[in-house]
Image 1 (cartoon, rainbow, N blue to C red):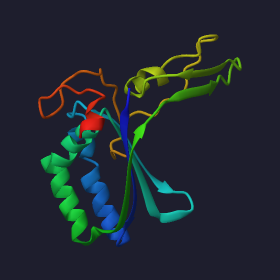
Image 2: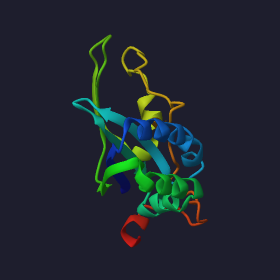
Image 3: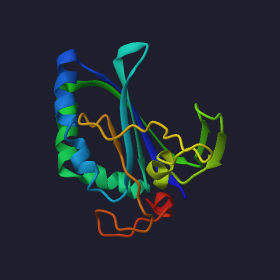
Image 4: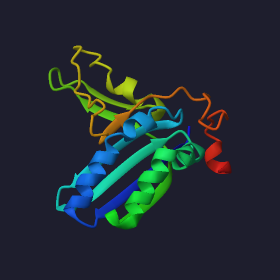
Length: 172
């Protein structure tokens, strides 16, 4: 199943602009979780450059990402950022071709190497070790919205009322 991935690399115009961004961004999760085509968002500071930030988001289709760009909250946040808060924003979009999970259990050394559907990632990450039952650590949703995740049943309707299908990636 094709998944649409968007990655951004951002520099803010000042430390104050980043602090204001964090306040606005903290409410992002409440808006994203309402979008049927949203799967995953993470935000982090580059370990070698404290002024460089990275965002990665996963969507059930390109159309699902466009639903987010049409969201009123997102539009206002983007306008705020474009009025001087962001100095630089590099955006890269691409289509996912596959996902694999490679795990080694710290208790029994059981090795797993398996393919999985990204739309079901949270369920897969919560699976215990099949040999000893170890619960692997899983990052949950954060109040800051720097980590927001959900699984999606493919075929449900997007914000525009249309069915979410992998083929939307090619037609959008």
